[in-house]
Amino acid sequence: MDKFNIAIDGPGAAGKSTVARIVAKLLGFVYVDTGAMYRAVTWKALQAGISPAEKQRLTEMASALRIELHPGEQAQQVLLDGEDVTDYIRSIAVTQNVSAIAAIPEIRRLLVDKQQDMARSKGVVMDGRDIGTHVLPDAELKIFMTASVRERAERRYLEMKAKHEDVTLEQVEQEIAERDRKDEQREASPLVQAPDAVLLDTSGLTVTQVAERILELAQAAAGKGIR
Ligand code: CDP
Ligand code: CDP
Image 1 (cartoon, rainbow, N blue to C red):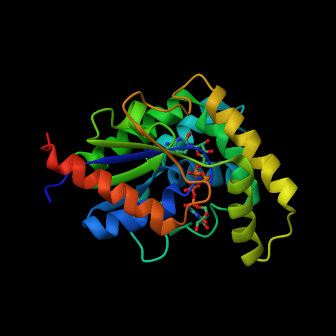
Image 2 (image 1 turned 60 degrees about the vertical axis):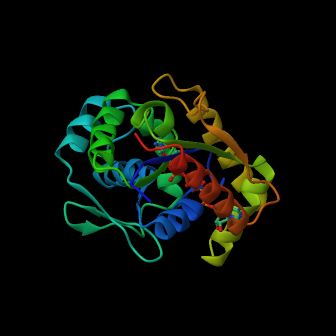
């Protein structure tokens, strides 16, 4: 199959990264988790004691950062100025602050430039919130992946429990709903389905079923002739 780009957007815990990684592996494409980039900047800001309100300082800090993404076996590895921060960027503190930082247009511009560079030679499966609408508007296949808030909360809760984190299902559901609201209502590249994206509601579906559906859509996109 010739190389082309696949954009996967949707709210948290819809299954984007799990499925995107499988699909990329099967197609021999590169998986790019853009959420990890916003999380990495947020982690650095917390470390440096910079609040989301200090936009100028944040932008200066982010523009001086060297962010590297390396495809790993389990998760994509994230390096910040050479330091492996993969395990730190999923912390509750980062999760609670990331949407505020991701709403800053200057920060988005910096990261979107990097994301577009990574996709230039095609063969990328990229997931996030604005990939089909802003980062890769010409992606050959666009998916908008969703699931009910309750089911997404249950999925994330199971992951957190497996890591022995001290949370309740209600807290996780509240956090996810709050982040959905912030991501959907911000002015800069809000979370919204691109008009030409295929809507995929994964409620009640297994990871394998969702991956198979995307592979079918990828075959169809490839069959149509890749630009
Ligand atoms: O953990 P989860 O999958 O829910 O989120 P993520 O993909 O790691 O993204 C974390 C946050 O980064 C999102 O809630 C958005 O605020 C922001 N984000 C964004 O604004 N644009 C993207 N392309 C990716 C993530
Ligand atoms: O990237 P995103 O935040 O959209 O979601 P994820 O981190 O890929 O998926 C969240 C969790 O839901 C993972 O533990 C997946 O294994 C699980 N999942 C699921 O149970 N059923 C699906 N159809 C998709 C994901």
